[in-house]
Amino acid sequence: MVNKKDTIYLYLNHSTKNKLTMANRDNNWKDRLNIVYSTNPDFKFETDNDIIEEVLPKQQQILRIFTEKRNRGGKTVTVIKGFVGPENELKELAKYLKRYCGTGGSVKDGEIIIQGEFKQKLKVKLKEEGYINTK
Image (cartoon, rainbow, N blue to C red; front, side, top):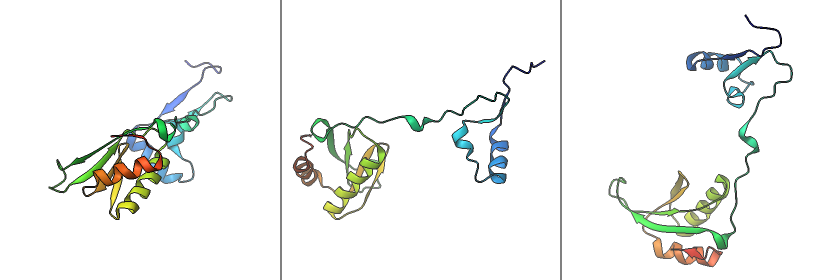
């Protein structure tokens, strides 16, 4: 038996969740962390949007540059690891470096992947840009 003062939470399984979002496109269920309904009038949904990522200055960033061929179909790529900061700044840095090298690449799992072997060229450019702890 549930008292009126108790809070009731209704959780949906994965298949029900998909049906619910099809019906209510403007109601973003991802922001509600699987909670569909609460009887508590003071209940507020908690979101992770308040998390502020730490941004280190360029001089304190420790970037590691290396070339890799493994699991790339025989193609050589240059990988840059160690960037600490928000994802959008990492993407901006990757875009700048790809344009500088004149080649393609991507950002995956906090790494910048540049197509081709540009280790020395990128090392010099990053040091010019202020990333002095680049190896």
